[in-house]
Length: 254
Image (cartoon, rainbow, N blue to C red; front, side):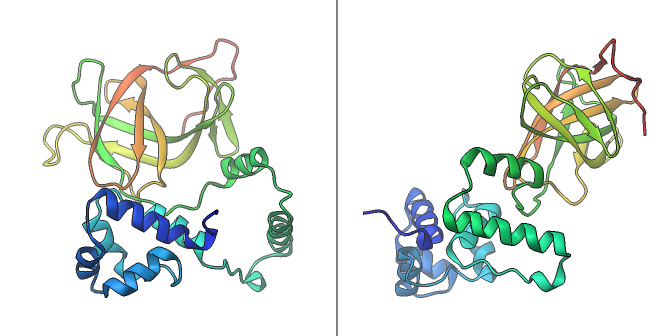
């Protein structure tokens, strides 16, 4: 028998609790709720755990992420949209998608394509670490953040402008989109340390590359920056130089 989708949050919570080898009584105590209440949440007979208790849950279960809590809670609760506050086109789009979801007329490939365009709506989390060159030495300068997505070849989109470059290595076969998050790579005299960066406002969970404009004038690609829960700093290493295509339009710098 298939478990009803209304228990998505409960299934996720139960799986993560068991992975950390907590009993329901032990976890309930940490969350300040009764074991019976936790049991009902896991079975899906009660709504998801209140959002104000999520920080305590994340502290108790290290693998749990805010993004996944939001996703499974949204799958569990009915989704309410206030279409009075949006324009006509947005309202019509929402209604068309709702109808196609209800009738099962939205294919997997089409849904993936839409997610590539609009993102998954996950809340941003901290993205921080150091940028290192191929010898493991910290780089100073500035970097631009690109979200990596699936796709043939790749292009870097800068607002209404665009440019194409050739990059060998893991970036091949990915689509890189500028998320308009320039970051400073700190110098050796900074208390945080040389090469350190901390993306303002954080980033939505996913994979990213950095277009590094080093202090010595070099432009380099560094990856991968894999954003999950923002708990740990990451070393992001230079993989190759950013070299314009011979037949591409001249790149317009910011």
